[in-house]
Image (tube, rainbow, N blue to C red; front, side):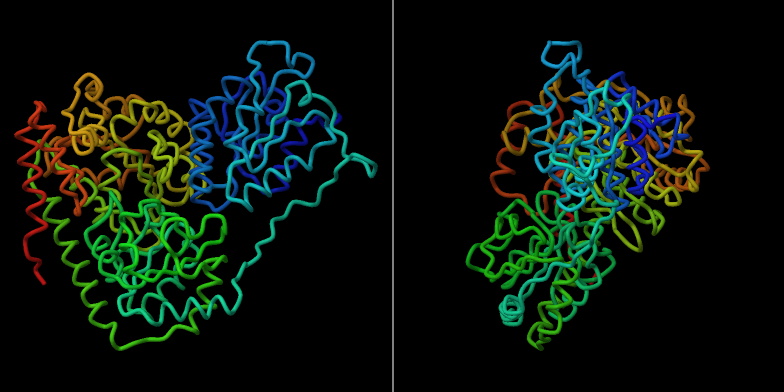
Length: 597
């Protein structure tokens, strides 16, 4: 039996070591779907409830495995559904390959059913590499280049294959004019390093500093040990961009935690008071949270020269691999006695901040304080757990209250900040690491948007995972809470009930219907035992916590304008104004109390 183009696509994916294709079927990829059947489902086809979820699952898999994620969808509507997940990959620099069907070549341009101009559709999101395969000889080069480009440029790519071509016999490219061969699947891993004179200039800046701060992002993940050595040599504090939350553990006394709107007071103080800044593997966009211009000398390390020197006036820009560059830089750095007081102050701020967070988390609320949900998890979560977070007010508590330690990993939609990836990221994480527990922190808005449907996907596959624990924690406040607070704090507008209030349902009851272990929590005393129960479950579990929407996700360094806008919103008739004022006052008061130290 001859090999079809669809068969060859899977053969080549296997040669690349691809284990999973996250997708949803349709007649635009019938030839590829049929090939999965002939190949005994290898690589494995992972079926979601919606193509957008397949793309998110591929992103989550790529983020937590370090490999290329692959997703597949049919022509027209299926391809359109992939877009949000692919943009999430593009903006967070994640390698994902989309394999997409198209109407038959003979029907193209004829306004045929489900015909969409896919090259125009994917032109931006897959701008690093987009190709339509119209003859068999274009493979394997097209697929190989899509995978190599995704990996090399940390970006989504797309391969469009018309459905009639998928069923044709595969013929390899010949050694002749206008045919393009390819090489055996392999990805080189070069270590890009700056020139020595550039390293010397960077060392001069860093050695001259008396109050050194580091800002690390996801690009520093493979350089954690080097970052730690630099921080300890220079007596520096280390702040983390949100996508870099898992680069260093939070039990290091000089790690100040997240930075920015969702950040911590020690990170704010670190940036405010430093005289020297080293940025490693981060494209953190909010300049207002970095040192005042002219106050600090700065050095940046990034592997992408096009993204360097964009956020702060950096004096020395080092284009190179984070780990290799720091290893080359370390012998040039000098310890200095005059930095000890700075490090001591940083560590004092960090210790007092954790005390503040504990006091804030333990404050009474109506009915449960959302900060306490993550605080109680943080005390119990296994040291090899993977945490996914969705976009919403719950993201604040993930950023501030979750204490990373051990081998813990965590991620979210950092740049696109789209709603909906929390549960599909968790599914992707389980396929990347089936032997590790995964926890998804998700708002009720995202659960209603798409999370509930993906619980079905979890139940379909969990028996294949060595560790069946996938815990979904729902922050149940019946409010699109982050936007409600943005209306108040940024626009001075009261909550608009018609747009912000969500229908009230029991997520625990829905999860039980699907076969989950499910626990509903309505009082703070139930929270700790509930976490113990779901983290010890022998199958996927869901924690449905009714929490207070009026606990303010206000940054510890809130501006006067933000406070003024919030006050204006309350005066205009916000329905929960009094309760909101009380919760806000209690929360902010904890920051003013002296620490035990």
